[in-house]
Image (cartoon, rainbow, N blue to C red; front, side):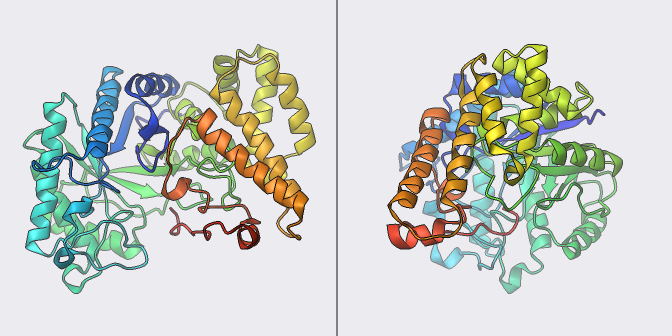
Length: 453
């Protein structure tokens, strides 16, 4: 198998690895994912939680530093021969632009720092933001080959003037494309169908045929949790079909093994099946959605298989073990088997997995890749010992404290993160015992993620 478009979408936000890494560290990490077969890099010049860094009368140090690091990452990717893709959330704006009279109307899947694009002044803000961002990238020596626009997460407006939202958004994105062409004449508009309904696909395709034939260059189809294929829907004429592959969880969804809550994630079965399915559906490639270093094994799997370097997942895992753990061929076979079983954490024979890890790790090259596997074992053991139910006696409370201490060690000592937000906070995707523990500990209430987030 060889898919021509293999993008690592690595948004630096919420305190994740890509936000925390310094420029040389990020460049070295990009070289590693390039080694496994990625040929495109994507990031989002986020405005979440920050004010406009381009305001002439303000000096917001956080967004300036964030944008500086993102531009350095884009330059590092292009120096490695990778194409660059800028992710856009068109009506999501900076904190200091959220005027009450311009706000979007919210709905269950419409959230964030949103303005209503049907209000002329708000639309002007959006287009000016796009112009300033593309100009900054161009002046900073960053080559942008495409942008990928999202209608939701973050995006949307549920007011009557914006209905149907998908068409209001499409027209806004087309205007932003014209802005981008001032600085990047050959830039391609790509559109991510994350959370689109089937009706919205129909509406968009009809609009594209009528008002913008040949304009959209790629539709990136959302693959729901636990699935290995996207909805087989038509795309506008001349438009590529790509897949949006979530690599931040294991083979099995809904068990808490997501976004580094239990350390490394491994999805050898799911990702192998996904690549086979999307290739059979005529997809030319994918965007692999990554939220940090914790999905490092999955990056190797999805890029190694789709680039044609490896025939199967086991071969990728053996090569991974040799590269990062210094494993001999015999040890690499054992490492590959050990890693693969973690696709479903509930099915792991924990005593056997612990014994094998202890044997293999004694001769392994030290580093964060080894340590987040060690942490995974520790967190799994503690979670099982705590159990989903029971009285919170002194022993069980001590186990819960040890669990949080290990999560803290994982985030600070292994991933080297600072303040984390949103999906990385403990209240998101917490253990099954979290709510009863919270009742006796006074911790924050669990917070559900939006469906498919």
